[in-house]
Image (cartoon, rainbow, N blue to C red; front, side, top):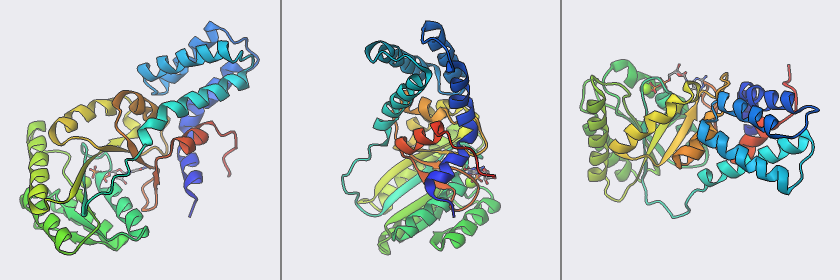
Length: 309
Ligand SMILES: Nc1nc2c(ncn2[C@@H]2O[C@H](COP(=O)(O)OP(=O)(O)O)[C@@H](O)[C@H]2O)c(=O)[nH]1
Ligand SMILES: [Mg+2]
């Protein structure tokens, strides 16, 4: 098994080429002037770092060039790296208030972003830290969805509460929260649907699921976690508002960073959303999940080491 950093580094290799690779090419041997800063800004924007974050980073870089008298490309890159790290850092501050059990993570997001897969990975992750974990199969729209999450429960060796397809998802959530409470489970992961007939139906259903959990386990700490697909770039940002309105959004998980050059979206998210990024998805396997760490993320983006063959 690859170490977390190695996994992160590999999965960000295309994003690294897009950001660090392009920037290294333009700064090489150049005079550090406004024209160069504008080119760096364009690279950032075109790598899905987002307009707001890119403008902010370039402003900071411009003052650093002056205040620190940066005179060569390596210094500019090092300063940019520090500024990106600074921008990402507040998003990872976890609050240390003890969470009353069960901690319920309501996993939301549009169809296909990786909710069910991420639940399998999270179950494995938390079970690995010694927590008792349970899954609630609240995407009851299709039998296949229930079977899919049941397979992940089996692979990760955790309990699952499920019903027949077509069952009311809020009723399954109620049962799952009740069972988690009765069995003193540490963490309950709720899988939800990403598509219904209309968006308002989906949002109403999610809100109802949340209310059933509150009813069945009033002392539970409920967190709504939104899953975003990293390959969709800027479009991912727009999904946050819709879900936040329905069930709130306490944290984000960005999936599919492997194989995409659009991983700069994580920086845009940090700048524009102010919601903590908790984990990153780095592949389809059960271990392909890394806790988000701004320092490791930036190091992986700027590391010079070549890909091993
Ligand atoms: N490469 C890659 N694929 C992923 C990742 N997470 C999920 N997937 C794939 O995305 C597809 C949809 O995942 P699924 O969990 O069913 O999405 P859901 O509809 O949101 O529940 C599946 O083929 C997964 O294997 C990831 O981090 N990396
Ligand atoms: Mg699913």
